[in-house]
Image (cartoon, helix red, strand yellow):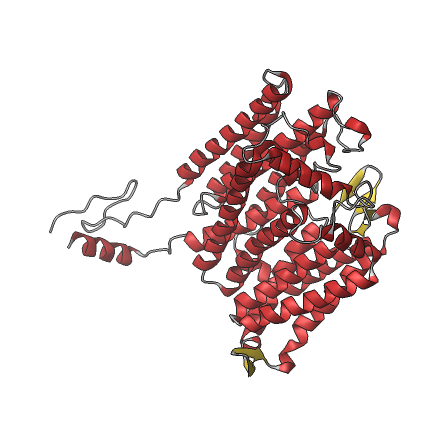
Length: 482
């Protein structure tokens, strides 16, 4: 029998060497991260040439600082989660970097006297908005590292299911009890505002509720999987098991009425319904969930003036009676994307600053104008890959709680993207949710990096090789030699 070469660093025993472990693919992650950083640097350079005909003065600051943060994230993964999926960090990095590029581009437009053209109140960008976004990126990476340091195993979160769920509900409720001056922005009470500091607690409540839903559904999934009557070929759940979804629907309706924000309520309720479907594999839960949310939306349309305005804008954004009022933002966003056409005007060469608040809710229309349909399809593809890697992690992990949590968090990114992109393209009524990683602001960016950290931790657990005893290693080598 031929001797088998030993793995690097392994000590042969009885003529046999331990089985080599599969590669953790951190080298692949570093290569893809360098590619992502090259895309961001090229985009910054393109903005400079588009605006002024030369490289932007802050190229080294922005690209160098951003690169240092991303390398720090990579080294943390290499240290704390060496078996994790190699694409999660590079995909998040390229989206985060392109968001900073667009904010820098809009900031420079204001500096050169373009913002506010034709008297339009375009944006609230300052001369340091891109720097602030880079600082928030640093906070997001710090939160990313903290999650990986504190939670070495994803099942640790399951121990605190109800505590974390209570924290999520408190985060949702806190803006409701604050006066409008400290919580309301554009008609929606979903912020905490004191002085020059503002935070959107719903972004973090989304993560807390995903943990709670995962823990609760793992404990109750056997009961919720039981079928009742069959209707039109679909096995409906038993009437006695409708309690949880009705309770969550009632809370969703209260949030909708109190915060006047159909986007946030749809995100939370959709997250619960999809996680319920993943846990039970019952299509009837999806149908019931869609029906309940449609009923809540109709109630809000009739009862809440702010929500009714959103439906009015959606049905006819170019109405002469509203185009210079409540539908101005959507109308200019749609015109900007139409002006961009197939390939766009080029970074720095369009006029996305015409759209009010383009740096936050409508940043997707800014990319649509300057990168065109091809560019935004590429962005959607990157988001799609990010969601796919999250769902792949959910499939790979064996622990039911981790499986539900990974699936729910991956879906939350997809659902949030659908809500905002569908709104700015007039597919669905416009809401106030942000575009993950791209929009200006700290809450969404920090929460998005925390989601990536949790997915990294679950991925590392799923892909980590099982420990082998000396006897198992020797047996493996014997089989391979034969």
